[in-house]
Image (spheres, helix red, strand yellow):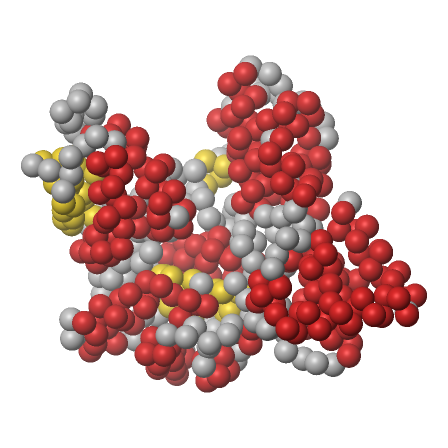
Length: 468
């Protein structure tokens, strides 16, 4: 690689811009679309990139081109155009790509970069993260059923449930399991046509096929796969023509006994704007909820990640009780938890000190403060469901039985008083309900609190549990 007109090497130039580009396009888009690109340099005011496929280059150009151009020019490099070419070293299916593996001592050895795989028709799946394997997935009570179901599907043989539908909030492991299934299937059954992509990518390819008048090609590609994996399916809700094509693709594959794996941020009957016939089809297989993490699972995740960090920071001491402290204090999101641990190890290494409680509180002051102040809607829902011994899906679902409706109103009341979320936002988290429904529920609990000692006691117990 060469150097630009200011003496900066091409890899250094691209590396210096990637953080800003990630901020502009979002982490998931950056991971799926920008990382696979190979920056080749600037020639005659044109930034040239190698792309694994024509489709990926075209998608980046249309959706993120302006953001990339802006960052080049903001950094003082005059760039007027972007050019994407299918690079010889990235265009081939990465059949030999390996996910993260464990060494003989059980520590995590990451493969280092995202890998792409292609099915037999040459259509490239979304990039797979080599860190997201079954070996690196920490299993606990909140996710053990989802993990077992994913493992069963990943064996590659016929299963009793099709589709497998995984759902849950942000950072609970849906995408991790989707990637793990894909990695395992590629290793166990290299003969299978496996296509993994997000619902947004499905929608984009559908629209592109309509525009280019290549719908027959689109249908043939998507209906000839052996395993179809679609992430974040809630994004097709409200897109009528995309839902229509998805429905027909779904039916053809199921009728041919081809496996379908779907993920979403909520259960099928809670996705507003989804056609009833699609909702019914999605519910015809196994629907599995990944619950918010409990203390034991968070501690297990921290222990696993700490072992991986020791590979990068050998000899760095960590005092007893630190991981337990973090598992108690950071309960909102696994990604926040993992990010906090990564920062903590790096900080301790740079200042040359062991990881003590004082250093942890100093390094993670902002994260700990945010976790202490913010109680999430999901945490309230989980605690209320546990307290009343009902399923989380029933708490947020459409059923109006008194045994579900009263706990639902209690949860709405606590969300109103213990979070900064607006009533419309709370309503959306309770199966897409209107804000007036939330207002009614809050008022009803306020009335009952003054009349019913049992309700008042429940509220106090739940509040203490959530604040501890």
